[in-house]
Length: 209
Image (cartoon, rainbow, N blue to C red):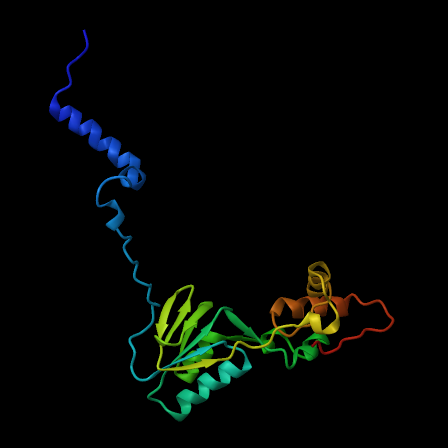
């Protein structure tokens, strides 16, 4: 004999079925077209409270570090935030001296945190992903930063196309086997290893485009 389902049990079963079907199951119902997805508020960067006109400097190479330092030095009321994707700074200017063991590695490597503390500004370790100039907002992978003034100091990059490199395989080989030593600290390590393992002949090091 088939068990009779009560009205209450029927509503429970049908309600569970609709829930599992999700929005796809509700798409054909009256009024479903008017339903709009909720807008998710943008994440704000986790930074100290603004204490003055905020200046965001994107990029902590030579230019960015210098600008952040002297902006704060010349106007202490500025709330300077330095945004940089790297966690530490490696100087390229005197790296040749390290290849020859004239200086040690600590002379080339510098702490962004120590520089920020000494300069009185804020270091924010994040990657800039976009800029909304109308809203005065810098977008990063760690949240948005509102600004009143913006400085873009992204630094340099290699342009292999200008020296005749047209394919990705050749460019990758040059980057890995013959690093220029202008950007990443690992490039310096690779070049020094080449110098130390050099057995004789002519060693050419030139400035890239």
